[in-house]
Image (tube, rainbow, N blue to C red; front, side):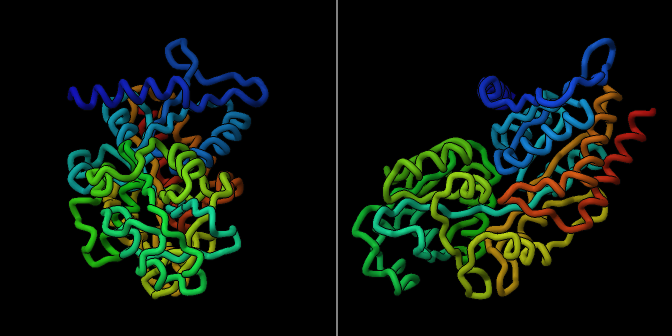
Length: 369
């Protein structure tokens, strides 16, 4: 509990600066509960933050329901949710099966937005028109410290057209230091696509990076932090949500997929990967296998580090106005939100819209009891 309290305290401190407070739009008669104005509080993944910014501003403008979202990382967001500091959480991976089993029938989770983890880099000798190709084995080598220089023969073999342009400069791996769903997705890819060369114990929201133990690399917080470090650090490499890479304009590598082809994240390559994902029938079901299915999915043009990010809510709330407001948010996203997608984000499979509407119905039923 002490550890969780520290996480929450840190998250709240960050929130004082990073909280998304939606104040735009025409005046509204805001919903109230016991004489106070209702404001929903959410926290969690940085992965969906730019899209949530867009959605929640439009939602407030149309519905008059204010939502604060704190992009503190999946791990901190879930801690805040389970301690009832936040009304909902966002996490790229869904709840692990063991956690879900502890809350069967109490917690709902919905994979409401799709995206990808992009590998970004800063090699001054390469023009932006150049395609840098990488695979899981090379990325694992960079992050475990066995590949040190950009002109390593293993990198050259993947890039014969630009092999003579790869410099004899030390690679600077950049990694997340906060509890991050993006890290879990990236390390799952390294494990799954290398047949275990990246060990399972190094898959998770926080990782004891071998390259850091060797005294190399740079840690940063949040996707914004990783983009900033890579942008400012020549010869560095990092992993971020694709939307952040697009916003920054930083070069993105092509990654070898399960069919042996090198692809970049795009709406098409993400959508093809999602064709192989089995979406559960109810928001109350176990979603724990969905990340494994979306990462390194089959398909000639599937992007291999594709991810679905989840919203996690209670089935019932003590405050009925919160349940009603959250139901309105879910219905708005299902019916209008996917028409307002930013570059870097892709609508989830059609079945997910039904899950959002089903979850809204469950919340509305609970608020009337």
